[in-house]
Image 1 (cartoon, rainbow, N blue to C red):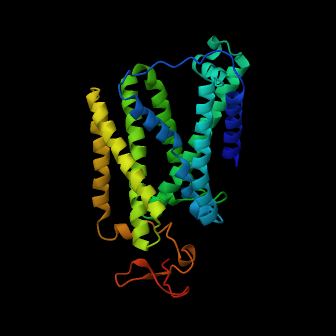
Image 2 (cartoon, helix red, strand yellow):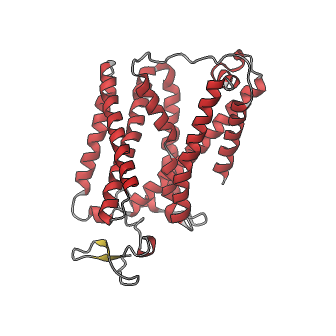
Length: 328
């Protein structure tokens, strides 16, 4: 609730500045790299700006009604973000965002009052703080789940006696986020090319994650026979578009003379394949997903129940509730 309150206040302030009439033209920011592939980097920036809405899924085991509240959050959040993007585009097109953009880019040198610039900076900092806090909470739950499934050391599964939160995992994630943010801020001026490479890599990995999830979702729905034409088409379009965007990024950065970015992107993608081969050892894959595994009450009415097959794996079969053999 605290994160939500901070984010709502920041957004209301920025939206208010965007819809109020503002005299004067908008001062455009300089092109940071002069690349001919501006549309590519714009698409990556837009995708990265929308990233994070899926973080709500990490709180499924802690929610009282996860199938309702988490699903609703994942569906509504991109709609709200998209509406804000459309509002920002309209404000820029009509010139109403002149005060906001000029104050953000040039501070008091743009003629904006010092109090307004200060309020804008505070609002942006609060928004980033809320985003970082939400991401840290989600990442800590991911590490906790990996600890339960014995993919990382077991001490990540320790929870606070009073708050029931995985505080060792949360402390490690927050420390890593703070270290990364501090390094990024210090290196932005002295090591600008390296920061640009890092920015490309981070955005590429976000797109790669969405591609994997889109493809895996289609495969999963086909396997449990709950697919619909619209969902399958959406997943295939998202996976294809993301793959094309990744390929374009690798080629474009190489053409721009940036060899480090495409090499590191390919290395990280290859690391995922190595990790997959490691997980294919006997017994490892059976532990993944146990912490978040659905039960018969979670499937659609009439779709069947979960039961163990001959190999001991839990699968969805036809039958009446109560026929399933639940695993601990």
